[in-house]
Every structure is written in C-alpha cells, then in structure tokens.
Length: 374
Ligand code: FES
Image (tube, rainbow, N blue to C red; front, side, top):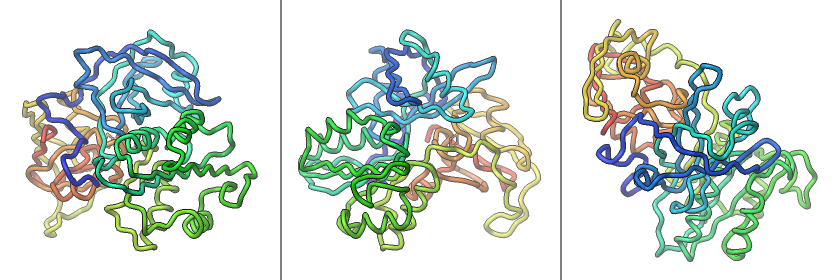
C-alpha cells in the first residue's frame, strides 16, 4: 500500500478517463515461443498522458473480426523514462494475444488508454530496504520494472525475485534479468523455480507450493526482514503466498499483489439488504460524474452493475477487464450503498476512502452517486 501521493490515477485535469489514444507500434519483439514485447511510440504531445510509474498497467483496445476487444497489460519498461512497452503472452483461446503474437507488426496502430495501477510502493532513495517479489509466468511483466526502477533509485536496497515457470524456455526477459544481475551482483538475487525441469537444488525444481515456500523461507529468505513483498501471477499462487505470509505474521500493509486473470463474467447476485438491514431497492437512480460531466441513469440492480448502467448512456465510461482486477472502472461512492462482489484491485486505504469498482458494484439503495473523476 502506498503511504504518500497515490499514483493510481493522475489528476483528471491532466488525464481523461475512458479516452483511448491511437499509438503506433514501434516494435514487436519475441520474448519466448508464446510471448512478445510490444513497444509503442508515444508522441511528444501525449508524453504526460502516458507517463507511468513502475508496476502500472494500461488498456489496449482493438477491433478483431468485428468485435471490440479490451485487454489490460502490465508495463514492462525497464525505467519510467524508457519506451512504453508491454508483454503479451499467448493465452489459450485468447483472441488479442494470438493476434499480437502472430500478426501485429511495427507500424500498426492500437488504441491505448493511459497507465493506471497502484502496484508499487513509493521509492525511498535514502533507505536501504529489502524487497522480494514472487512471480509466475507473465507475472514478471510489472515486476521487471519494479526491480529495475527500485534498484536504480534506492542504492542501498536489495531485491530478490522468486520466479516460477514450467521450463527454462518459458522464462520471459531472461536476458534482461541476467543484465540486472550483472549490474547489481550484490543487490539482486534471482531464484528460478521450474516446475517441469530438474534443477540444481530442491528449491529450483517443482511448483511453487506450500512446501517450496517453507524451503525458501527457511533457507534463503527471512520473511521478517523483508520490507515489501510483491506478488504477481495466477490467483492461486498469489493467495498461497499471501496466506503463507499472513500465517508467519507478516502484515498485509507489506504485501502488494496483482492478479492477471479476470473472471470474464458478470458479478453474482447482490445482497438482499443494506448494511443497516433495509431491504435492497428494486431499482436505482444512479448519478455519475465523468470528465466533469454528470449523467443520470435508472438501472435494475439485479441485472446491471453501476458500470453497465453507465455504459448504456455514455460509451466513454472507463473499463477494461470487467472482472475486478484492473481498477480501470474505479470511482468514488459519494452517496448511497452498493454491493461490490470482487475486488482484486483496490487497496485497503482506497476502500476506506470510499472507492469502488463499478464493474463489480450493484446498487443497494434507491439513489447512488459515484464520481469517476475523484
Ligand atoms: S474494469 Fe477492471 S476492475 Fe472493473
């Protein structure tokens, strides 16, 4: 969790929620047999709009076979002042990931929304901290920029990466990780864990499971001495490590995580009662503010979320994953009550401040007011 100015969203005055900009692809580089890095050209006039912080992600929109697709990808640039780059790993049945891996070329144009996300901690150049990341597969993408940026900005800090993959051929950014190792031999440690290859030690072979964590935390990493943990990968892995750390008494404020798979379905039915025990309203009058303009829509909370209602009247309402993962649809709840089904994106301080994910929120009260600009 960040303790100073949160970089999840820049002030609305400088950025426009839900607005995509056409960016030209500068390069498509193969990372592994089934993953590519896509680098964008950002024109000078959009440099501020696309300024990013290590660990953030962005949304790409394109039309394939007559269908609009939106996909959210972590930025894997090595430094916030470096070229804007994402990594796209081919997913089974993934239409955009197949397109990016097979057909996307330098010179093509994609619609891109500005970077978002709070998966980082503020840099502290004057402190010597211990950072540990546990990532699997393409979970390395935000972690790469966390590692390179932190080691460059915090000269006394150390970073350990525990990186799980099936085989050595699946390891993304192998050369770049080796470069980091060469550059910071005393401060960066890479622990590769390969599930389908026999490694040099019990730690380096097999899946990252409870036994593996026990080995790691007994012999290689002292959890009590770690200032910040970063977990990125499938939900099962992130939960496993988070729960293990909780069991060892590590506070949630030191454990930051990001999932990369959204459940592609509408949230489940809402609660039948508000917090105070009043029956949930049958219909709801939702007022939302976006880019300084307020709009009202009546919605049926049993079939719609705040986001789907908003999209019915304004197609610029911001969203990407619709699964509670990316945080693009975040808004501040100013009045009324909602039932938010899933949240893998908002930190405890944002929840306490009243933020909700509108793609996961069904109204419970007759009036609901949210502000996307807050
Ligand atoms: S659109 Fe991704 S969390 Fe709502």
